[in-house]
Image 1: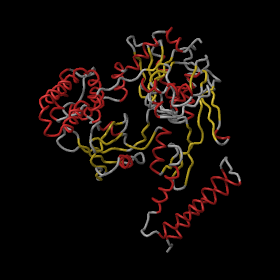
Image 2: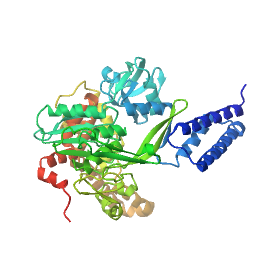
Image 3: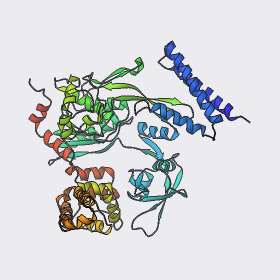
Image 4: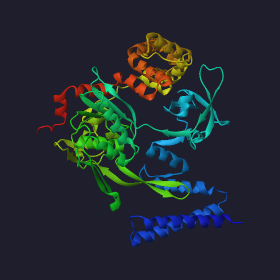
Length: 561
């Protein structure tokens, strides 16, 4: 029988072999001093690990202890360098290839229960009739209540062609519903919507959701389909909420818009292999069509590469709010036992030479006040010039040419979202209906029913004024409070009246949220996007800009000194 010490020693030998083999075949060779430090510290780490596994007062889990050590080591580096176990590798494959073996259900926790957030169009769950809002109770006879979202996702995924039984609870259904689903290869769409927007439907709109290997070819196909529907005044490329993906996919997408031979992005790393300049090697698809790129604080990485290339070459106007600011490049290194290391190997620069890597949380705030407060630090950042000579700056994300913030949410709206009120009411609404009318809208009757439902659910949300009243009572104490009790009662009634008025004042925004959630129970993602675009402030602003050619051209022209 092999002792714990022998097992630990064998593991250390295996790790050492993997480490030094990786160095031998890699592009970087450490100096003699670095190599000495590497061997010395690895031996120390291995000795500590072996002693703990074999001699600590209580038995320890060798795998867990090693994982803690690895995580602590990586915690000293940037947040994007991480260890990937087998489950993480499966998720990575989904991100890079845009496909996975599963039933096509996006799940999350709502009210502490595993809930279907959205069925993926075309997946087995979507085709069998599972709805947004369904609560998953069991998967293949295993109760999912105590499981994490990640554990549930693992149970749902598997080899294409295999079967899985999913039981859900649905509001309005007299008993749990059982679905016999078949795992299949799910292809995630890079482009989730393509169509025309504006009062005259003369502006093309494309929503690019992710950057997998086929992103550029998918986008090109959709753009060609748009041109076949007639002439366009301009094009909107929506990169909002797109967290990025593959570097080469970003380069290929940018090539659809910038001139042949133009620099798209450059990378700078510690080793020569990590440093490179990527240029467009094809003519652009629609070189003369005015272009607006939409971005926000969740546009990151590959999205910033594309928006940065378009901005730096003055090919189009970037509109929205400051992007996330992820200017680092990661490479995947395979490790033993189907694990990997996702490691930052380089930082990238836009064609003008700027870095957009996040530097400080304050400067990234896209509110007007924060931008004004951060003006001193902004002016201190290095400046660069676009192709036409416009000034752009380093750091803290990509700043839009035209800043248009999304509509700010009221206290009532935030409270309703925080408590998932729209989500749960949509379940209640869908429980008594099998379909929606083609031109569904949230009528006064539906809105009033929503308010009545909130009353039944005893929905409450405290305002700042109510917090102040409560603090006032605490400050006065029970005895002194009696003297001002009547005045406080008047204040409380005024707050209640203000809350009632809030439902009227903020009705358009609340109706918009209701419509989005109700549509999610009956329509595909592309149909939902089409229905919600007319109330999208940033889209309508982009349409207006494309209808004003002089203003559009002026934005892309450098200011005179």
